[in-house]
View 1: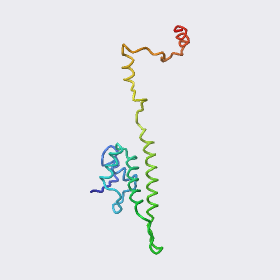
View 2: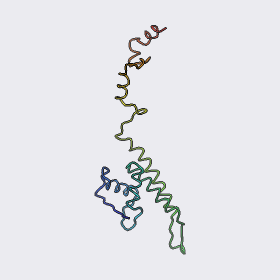
View 3: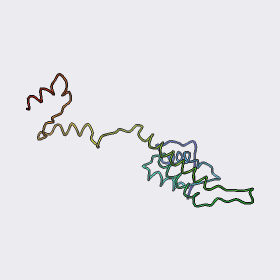
View 4: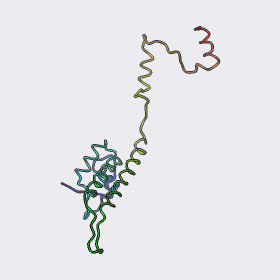
Length: 153
């Protein structure tokens, strides 16, 4: 088991950089207060398609679960450990990171409707046995739609 963190390596294009980014997002950067091992964060990254925000949300949920199983303790009113508060805070962090993942995962991503690309449309239109469409680009220009209806009545 290993625990590493390098604040100078926050490059999301490398495996070590992604691991460091997730640590930064969840606040697991203190050598003397380690929360998750590298292997656990790498698993979170693999489950999240290397999206650091979604991996951070997964990791925060794991940390919340570990605190949720601990009880709140108080000793003579002088010392206490509020593990339920920590569990709630990490759960809230998980939700926040998930929202950020949804927001930032669309950046730089090309969207397509139903998986149809321009190349697939051009290829389909060039098929010789394809029936012609009743709709076309510019069909309402210069009354062509009205003419089409009259011609086909």
